[in-house]
Image 1 (cartoon, rainbow, N blue to C red):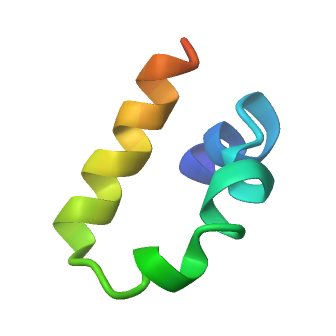
Image 2 (image 1 turned 60 degrees about the vertical axis):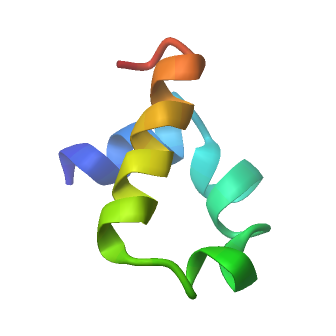
Length: 47
């Protein structure tokens, strides 16, 4: 719930990054995806 709030409401990276980049992201490892999303959240000052 908290993670969803971060990626959907506080940063909107769900709609602006994750969904549009689904094709290349879904071929990556879980670790890579988590690190990538954390990097985007940090770049946007969310975390």
